[in-house]
Image (cartoon, one colour):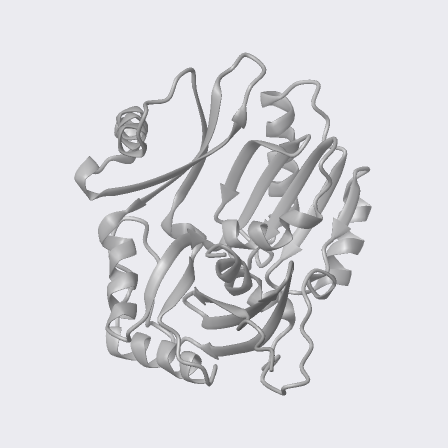
Length: 310
């Protein structure tokens, strides 16, 4: 009798002031399939977002809400990829002529450059970075994520009390991009707009190389949202003269796909593509374990978090 190898399972969790979402993925050969989804609303006043101070106002209610969602997966989990609100981290693209030999020395170099911008002690700063390419002049391009240790640690410690350990912690906008990135063209100047209700991210890739990022604390609920997007695109053109954006891809956490497509196409002469989540990942629900009480777009940060630990 031949025994098949067990399929690998990856779990992601997305926590916001409004809800908790969990996604469990199964990897079979090269493909991923969603095997379970679960979501629950976060009671009001449980989380109050702040970049500098702790966010969890009521830890007991917070842990109960997370536990209710995790229990809905019907499979015990211990390690996850974690998505936290975009407001808890600062992202930037930085360029360095040379990099130290070690990760720790690189982070010290980044911290030294950012010290005057942070307005907090370096001892209480959490810095992550990834080398994402090189400029034509040889400069190293880094994607840098900066957060406050006490703020991030508060979420991690409350999860640890539930027996859940975070293998990777990223802002939800990056995990959203992580979900969609395989469908972005690798040639040309391409923009990706990640839309949340109260926040949006704007990434620009030049021949698949990330060269520009901006995040704004306004989302689809803001009356001036489309004007803000237009201003960011103009800012990119000022920073990168001659680098016209050829296509705009939109990933949304708040559904409204048809409405977004209609409005964007009426405002811009750029080719606009509203990305469809169900065309990217298989959500075959033969087991009956996928709780799609909301559109799949609401689960994308959790799915992206699961992919971050692959």
